[in-house]
Length: 264
Image: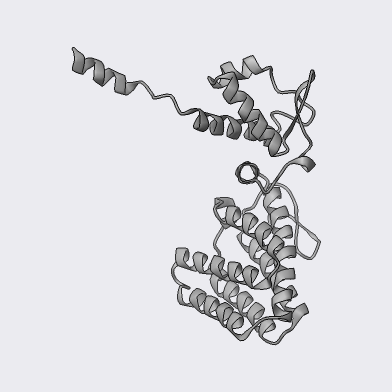
């Protein structure tokens, strides 16, 4: 009898600790806001309703709403309630917010915007490296490029070597703020299957050529050339990978490109 009772108890799911419950509540509320099921200006349902919906205590719920406020998604007003804020107030570098934006990015518009920001930051950092670098720093970039070439036929290794190259350039640039922002964007982007996109047969050799152009410009202290090489690489490589969708998007040259055109 006792053994049967113990066996049955294993079938009952254990209650998550309050901290983990709070994480789950925050993630679901972030998704609701990012997907506009809760729109700008909307008031969150009353505390009691939300507590019952999520199956958490009011204490856990209050802490979760506090996390949302810290992320800039809501504002809590005494006597008015908790109101959803406009996207311009959101902390889009927050891992939970950025993940929700990318995961729910059906039109790829967020990834298009991420590419624009990445290209601007990394091209500036490439220019800074071209303007001032040591022979050891140049060798570090050359070694990173060599690692990419050596892993040309191993997809996962090649992608990792690609990340190492970009991280090395960011770190060498000496621009800590740009490095921090770019790494946040890049790290979360490469975890997305949408960002990985399609893989045309000529993608790897073209990517190697583009990285080679960046290193060559840096080696000859060509600031404008390094900026352009990095900017073009980030935009063009995204266009190669970009999954087709049903809305036009803007190419790196500013022209609209319809979705029935194949990736480069």
